[in-house]
Length: 247
Length: 247
Image (cartoon, rainbow over all chains, first blue to last red; front, side, top):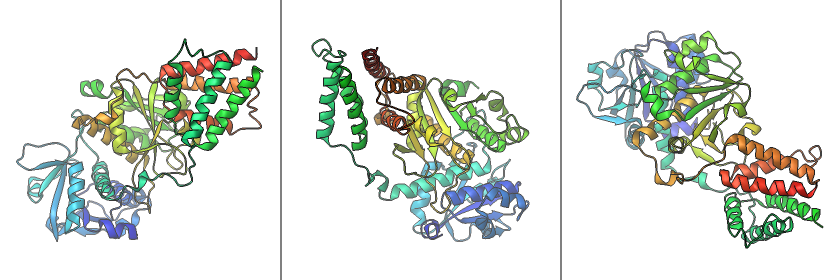
């Protein structure tokens, strides 16, 4: 797991008092998907548990390495940034940030010190005392008519934003064109347009004086494709065959 | 559900051939959390099912309103933007965007027409034929050592980005479609392919048994364009004219 260890090692996920072991397993799976490995469980109701292992679906290494703690304070040991998650904005005085900002902040600060991303109980979330230990609260936007987010879904969203923040910090290699692709040259594309125009004249579809806009429109269509050489050859083959019908 | 109906009504979630009913329920829950309501199920293995209802956890209204379809094409009826989801970048020529861009694009275009966000099978994702019906593919970033994202997690990430795009009003100007643009519907594009194939057969350019790859290649060319209605009409006019030459 060299990929994970190098990059995300200072970010831990803390789940408090989780009732359903399946949620712990599902959280482990999404963490691993998003490149995080360190799971802290504060007084889980049932752990270890077969449901957790089943839901982890191949991320059970995170479960066996998980740190089980008897208090929230213990789970936060060594952390200099603690972000708590809450689905609904409560009437409390606290700084709220959204998940995107939380992702950026976690990645940024994890270069220097330990960061904890905290998720509360399924039904009741975090207590006021626990909120008191968080530096900021992450507010995940939800449909106001149906805001009860599953705890593993909350972990999914926040860890996805961590992943995105990491990726955006990297050189954007995705923009590289594939080396094997051989695009048609501009000259060949021009020859295709000439061939297309001649064919349309041959089959009496185009009379340039009457429809001066037709060729510009067709150029606009085909220019959007960025044709490869092989594809251009197919299209020209069709034009050749069409022209022969009039001979 | 006034909140949902007003804002997100043109965005549908399409799940293809889902094996585990629990995943359908979990997807319904995250959809509703993120303010989406329209679920299309293409040949689900088991539906309706008690596991789906249990996992939906209060979002069972989305399940009872879900549209069950017998083909992918049926699920796309009326859609003018179709975005498919894939966890791993495959060696295919297709335009990839990330989930964030997909959220912005969906929100932006849903103001004008129907949008489909498509999720494939749990193990094998989308087939090449299904990919052929998508205008762009959404690539969700994952840990390369553990990239198998649960399908409901994929729905969670993409719908979260839809929600964020709505909330932040962050519809970027670059994504704005031209106001007058009317894209051709999926059904019309399909009819164009049928017409193209028939014409190529008529003019003796295509013998399907001898060249089974020709139509897939041509689909791949024209799918990249995202044809507007007017452009489609021109291309079909050319086909009509060409067919008449053989009469």
